[in-house]
Length: 440
Image (cartoon, rainbow, N blue to C red; front, side, top):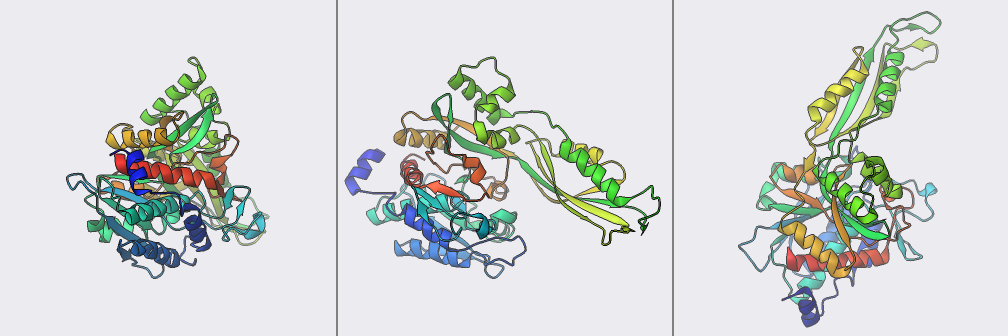
């Protein structure tokens, strides 16, 4: 039975509740401050579990730390010979300063066709799509082909320690039989050469959060000191922050560049010229083709006329697949012999083939709602819960389908002021995900 036939037969409207569910999720403040001082994910998790229970799907609650709550549920498919598909979304969001926003970041306001709020694109939009589709199909008795494991996680915005990694470490039986996964930061549209191109995430860069330390001789600020720790740290972070890492596009990005050449007819264009075709989104695309090292924090001294005996800095490093050792060696070389570099968090880079039945299903599902769609993979500059699932051998793709206005600077909305998503894009995504469940 095709998606069209099944939809007509049982009258499923997968987008019926998606906007309202997304609004309610936004109104559940799940700010993750990184130090457990935030409100946690408990209320949002209870809301998700209640929505699933209402249609006969019971959940398992995973909460090792009070308030840092995960929800995992299993939705049985029609073909038990197929391995389960993990569909995951995180419930936490980064902080938002209300004074900077046009509207309350936790009110879920709809203005001029946009739903505003922290988490609107990262990633309560996908959580809402999934819940809307599951509820509509479950009410109509329309089960998916594959068994779907639903995971709504905590703590993704601070490394997934209380979330996906906790599940893998202590409750892996809930997800271990899955072979593939679908999550965030992919499936959104951009415009290239006047045509819509949907970017599917087929990998993500590795993560190296590093602490730099310099030691020197403490003393009076009026005297000469040859080994000033502040100077050593300043020299190191300047070299690291200004380093011009070269373009080294991997398999996913090579496919993407070829697609841009096809859409623009620019067969002889350079990598930089092709990346520039993405407009503001180039900030994300460019970062997926090169290593990155950004100084983010400084800590030194306690009085203006006292030379401190030590100084510290933090650097956010992101490296391409297969380059972890070379990246760390380069950073240490840039820092110089007077500064030590200690990785505080080190997580691997991931990249999966842009091929197979699941990739085909995502592509066909997009074409079902947008026949003019073009599709290509990309390597994401940031990280997701996929790093945890990969420890179990689960191959993860980013697929939160959104058909967006060509003039929307979408990538700036991630962790940005006035984060928002078009309501019709939410509805589009729900319809695409509905189709996917009949194809995957």
